[in-house]
Image 1 (cartoon, rainbow over the protein chains, first blue to last red):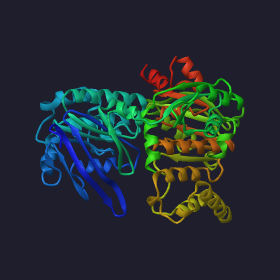
Image 2 (image 1 turned 90 degrees about the horizontal axis):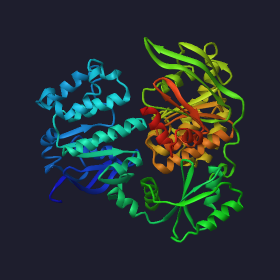
Image 3 (image 1 turned 30 degrees about the vertical axis):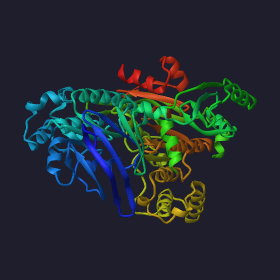
Length: 307
Length: 254
């Protein structure tokens, strides 16, 4: 365990009957770190968060939060952790203000005492403080849930897919909020299925089917991408994808919007030869560019290796 | 490698309108959820219907599917009037949402049979379609498995196949790829393209902006109105943005 670890997980396994939800995972999160768990549904993100927030028992392995054991010291952890579950879990028939007040009271504090912590987020929904939580839009529910998770001044914040189903603009704003919480010194563990959010974290764990495929800084994940990558654009993307998959030496071809990302094991890919090949196959306005991998490229490559 | 990827882009878009919306207004009390929406969708088109949360997308989709009446406006879906021929509309469309429309405690085959029955297919038709579906999706082995026991990516592909089981004119996909891994997400879009190639019109919402680029045309709703509607290329040009993500952010933040 590193000295400044806020969250420590060692050889954690969780089974549900036959299903292996978490398969022997280990990691540390440092104090004040913004740490992302990136992966699709079924990766094990929610199970992990439920174990760390003492709501679920591990099958084997040990975990601690701020030095407290998740089994022995669960009551202590509940006082210092803030948890925003993936499913909206506030009281739908209480108003915005009543919900926040409820969570403050449970933790023996008041809205007034910790208002400064939630001010920036809560102010955006305060005009609707008398509206029932069930009647809020998705973006507002998310802000209220974060306020409720923060009102007792937690040391560690667990946010389970806070941006799922949220539009691109609200996602951007949510991450700006997280950055400021991090600056306030709070350790944040956040999970997301959106690969593009990885770059906003200090470090990320890329997860799939209960495994951590890699843990690193986003920069390092990209630097470790083992292949050379070209971005290819042509008039007709779907025909292009098929054609590229037939090209000798191609490792993978994936659509990225209107371009295709083509990877090669051989680092010396001749751009001009590929361009010639595509022109010969009647592709027009072909543009080929060497590019750096995105986290999504890395994720897919790691998935292929793990199969 | 699916065969349809070898065929040229989406050549099946026709000039025939399959959805026509003129001045659609939907009010809830004094709140205007849809403010004079006007657009057409062409037969065989993949039409992206984007917008921020709360912009009024779901309200509009419910109206287009015949589940809710507009306050005013003229609408025709699959050739039928949305006020007077709602049952006809429902027979001619398919719908799939992010939350699966499949029954967890029924098997794969039972789900297909159930939906086939709802859409009035004969048992013989259902059996033959179920058979070809299993072959096509490569999950013959899962025929008698409960939905809750199959992987998420399979569920999603099956839910889509079931939504087009009755060969509808239009299929509405409401955030169909939420939460799936990036490889499955791309396979799912292969299926969407295949459906479009057989002439089914695809009306799709998504929060993944790279997926917006796979659509023939995209509309972006902001606060109840359609703020932009064009091909992804034209939108990027119009808003001087390198990606649809930036087009979206420019529009929704304005």
